[in-house]
Length: 148
Image 1 (cartoon, helix red, strand yellow):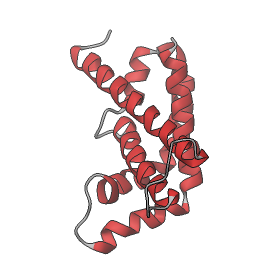
Image 2 (image 1 turned 90 degrees about the vertical axis):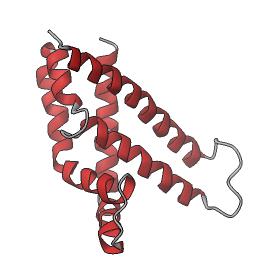
Image 3 (image 1 turned 180 degrees about the horizontal axis):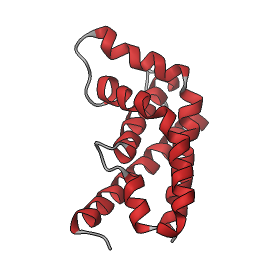
Image 4 (image 1 turned 90 degrees about the horizontal axis):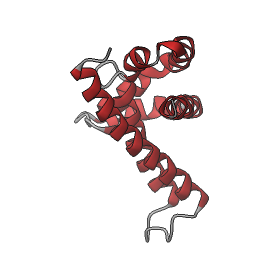
């Protein structure tokens, strides 16, 4: 049984999930060149990096234990998919500290000390392919569960 707080978290999650999906689609459209004219004087790569930064911050808010912590809510809502949810969470867990630090110091809450601001970006870029796979896996799971 879901509490009022659980239900509120679910509604907030659905809004954040929609925004995350839209950012994901925008990123891919920009990357494919199908999102209109480029901004004069700004490279596609710079715009892509900005969209990726925001999308990762949204993603972090959805999965972070200090945010919506969607995995715990999913476990309550979909106990029949407990193993699947735990599996996807285990794929993401190794990246959570990096993602949270990137969000807190670089994406949402910029650190005034340049080293503290820039260092998480460098560490994130070293793992960008692994993190991108983790984000895609979460989106796959979210899509599966929304259909249920």
